[in-house]
Image (cartoon, rainbow, N blue to C red; front, side, top):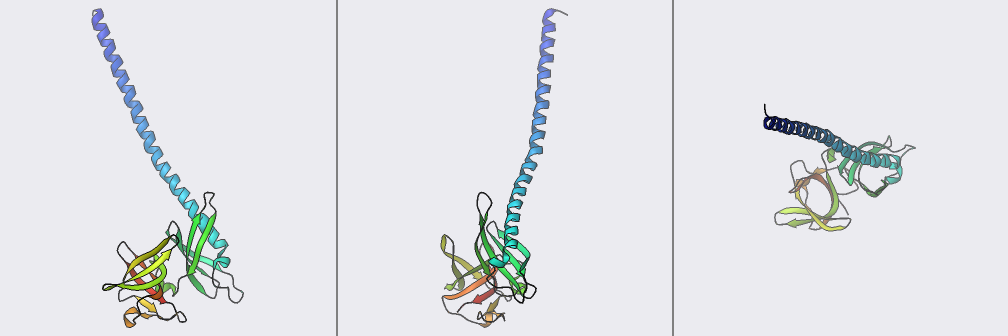
Length: 216
């Protein structure tokens, strides 16, 4: 075998070695990336869960001060359930052993994770009437637009928001705040601009009315 052939064989072996080593390194990098990605996602979820737990603990620890109602007959308020509607609001169920309430809490978190409760308002009506699926509870004015009713309401920094209302056979109304007795919304009528709290299930197009409580 002459010198020229030896050099050719050596170059071939060298190139093959480089390709094998490079391929092995690339596979290891892909495996490492795949391993790290889920961990990063899990860390993000853990951080979000941690923030929500901070809010839960704050509400539980301060429920007596947050509640618009006072404890009765020596009872003490305690939270029975907290369900987050989004990243800035939650439905809170609590009681004192005598009376049970459901409230909507709107909150924010500072960069150092201090909880600020921006509002804490009772949702009127029983838990069964409100339904566990309720994700919309706002107070405003009922106005008619064409053949449909809508609620015009405000949120902090967001004036004149509107929500189209969708009524079903199950939609209930409480005609006066003094009573908790509800009737089918189809059995009553109301004036343009009537003030009310609407509780319902919101999707992209409308709010399916579960319960409306009219104000004086």
